Image (cartoon, rainbow, N blue to C red; front, top):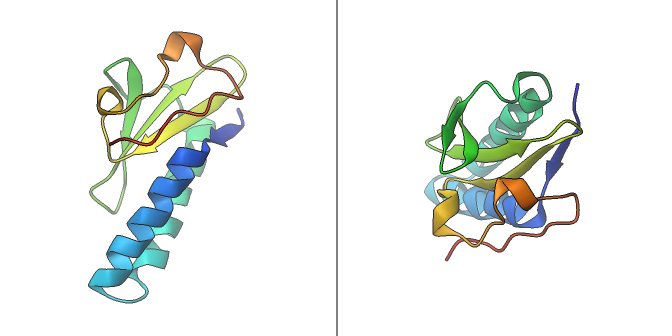
Length: 107
């Protein structure tokens, strides 16, 4: 199993999603985060089987209308963003990513 690295901007996306869903109904935000974290954790086993989209793998969330974009190397799976297509943000290309890459949030 490969470790999954969640970059800080992707973690911020989760918190923004929590806020959005909690504004719809209190408690749904926690369900959202738990569901997405479970989906992300599944990448340890199922990385690389998803459709390629704009140079990244795209996994759709199992419970919420959210896409999870990531790249996989021989050493790790790096998760870049939730819900935004990578070309809409300033993410590095999959060919030059590494552990300390910190892509910027989509605008």
